[in-house]
Structure formats: C-alpha cells, structure tokens
Amino acid sequence: MAYTILIINPGSTSTKIGVYEDEKQIFEETLRHPTEEIAKYTSIIDQKDFRKEVILNVLKEKNFDIKTLDVVVGRGGLLKPIPGGTYAVTDDLLEDLRIGKQGQHASNLGGILAKEIGDSVGVPSYIVDPVVVDELEPVARYSGMPELPRRSIFHALNQKAVAKRYAKEIGKSYDELSLIVIHMGGGVSVGAHKNGKVIDVNNILDGEGAFSPERAGTVPVGDLIKLCYSGKYTEKEIYKKICGNGGFNGYMGTNDMRDLMKMKAEGNQDAANLIDAFHYQIAKDAGAMAAVLDGKVDQIICTGGIAYNAETIDALKAKLGFIADFTVYPGEDELLALAQGALRVMNGEEEAKIY
Figure 1 (cartoon, rainbow, N blue to C red):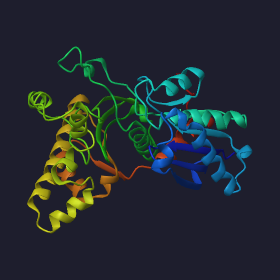
Figure 2: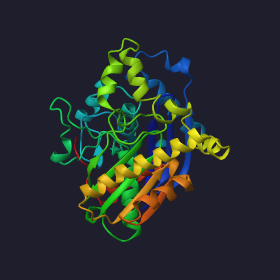
Figure 3: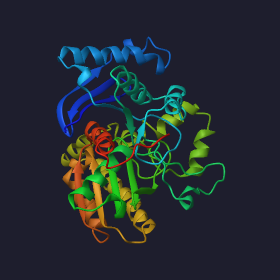
C-alpha cells in the first residue's frame, strides 16, 4: 500500500511543502512570506497560525483533501541534542520546540505544524534527523577547554539520507558501514559515520572546520580574542564575521561558488587561490575523519549544492582517493529525506523514537 505524506519544511522567509505517495512526489510548493508579513510577529512561535493557514489554503487550491493523508512529517527544530532517527511528535517534544530549547529558528515550527494538521485528521506526525542530532563519541567532545565542549550541529538530515541511500544501493545496512560524508552548501560539514552513528562531525554553525560560502570555520583563536577586544566591533558584528559574512563572503563578497568559478575563469587569481584553499581545508577535515575511523573507510560521499561542481569533486578525489572511492549525490532533497524518514517507520523498517 502506498502512503500519502504531507511534508512541511519551514524556513525563515518561506515554507516549503510537499505531498508524496511513498517516495514519489505528487507536488511541492515554496510558499514565500514577505518580510513585512513576518515582521508583524514578535517571535517564531507567533507565526504558527499564519503559516498553517497559508499551507491549508494552498492544499485547498490544489484540490487536495487532507483527509486522504496517512502521515504528516515536519522539519525538526532546535531541540536538545538527540540521536538520529524519526521521532513521534509528543507533548515533551512540542514543548521544547515552542520554547526553542537551543534557540529560535523557523524549523521549530515544522513539528508543531505537523502535529496540528496530523491531529486534525487523526494521523501520526513525525520529525526526522533535526540539526541537533548528536551521536558524538565521548572522546570527540573534548575541546581543550572544559567550559567549551565540542557540539554536534550539522546537516544531519541530508548526511543521514545520503548515507542510507548509498547503503541501500549497494545492498548493505547503514549500520554496518564506515563512511565519510561531506556536505557542501552554505556551510560545510564533514562527518564520520560508523555503525549507523555520526561519531564525529564539525559544528558547522559557529564552531569549526573548513570555511564555507558564508562561514569562517576554524579561525586562529588568539587573534580572534584580540579582535573581540579591539573596540572596533560589537558582539553581534563579530558573530556575523564568523557566521554569515565569513568564508567566501569575507574574502570575495559572494556566497556563490559559481561566481568564484567565473572569476577564476576570467583570470582572477584571488578567486583561484580561495577555491584551492576551500578544497584544501575540506580534504584536511576528511583526512582527520579517516583517522577517527581507524583508516577503515568503505566510501566517501559528497553531497550538497557545491557537489555539482566537477572541479571540487576532482580536487577532493586527488587528495582523498587514497582513502576510499567516491560516490557523489549532488544537491539536497530535504522533502524527500523527510518523506523517507516517515516511510521507514510506516513500513516497519524502523521504530519511531520517543523524545
């Protein structure tokens, strides 16, 4: 039997929705929310009814009867750190989404909206692999400062989805593989996957690792302290330098790899050097993850928007090919990944986890 699934993925200025029958997309829509509309609400949670109404109106316009749904799945938000998997939307989970356990982000609305719409037609609601998935081994949590343990914040949804996709394609279980997964988008995450868990990964948001289109990654900490106390910047401005205006943006004023490639083709040496440094840093992080996996790596998987860039893949293969072979799944299909997470539970392949 095919399951009809509604997927809800809220972003800061839009809500992406999709209706799937199993893994087949029936339709998807990106519902844009004008800045002035969003500005009316003092907090993320206050936007709930407005976004719900927009979703239900679009479904009505498409003559889709929500009573035909079997399950609703939402993007997971900033909950407490949890192991990966598909989670039933329970009261405890709802409460932590409402208060924003680790911060306010539009994705906190995913589970809340899924629950309300699911309950209205009497079907289950789930979230899948939110960014707070934390499966780090105890040894990976040490940073060198007791007050600052390393945290797991990364592209959990896409990293897990492509790792499971690769396992399925080669006829093995994700739980028996050792993989390095490299996600290259607005941020870059490099994860070591062992026996179904991401045992080490960089905190992509404001922590460490390779620089990316918008983020600084690891920076010289002593110099950063001097910058903080130079009197030139507010805390907010320093944070923006690390997350938002770091990486490509900081050096070249663009967050688009295609712009850099065009500049390089036109003879811009600064752009060429920056691209080389980008590849160098990612390869260095992946090499470290090979050590985490004791050198026993079944495959290196590249994903995210920048994985479409052949030069990036060639550069990483040249540096990392001695470790393992490569599989490339370019782009990031979050709606499909969310649908697959719900399906694994509906089909009995996995049990829904309780938060």
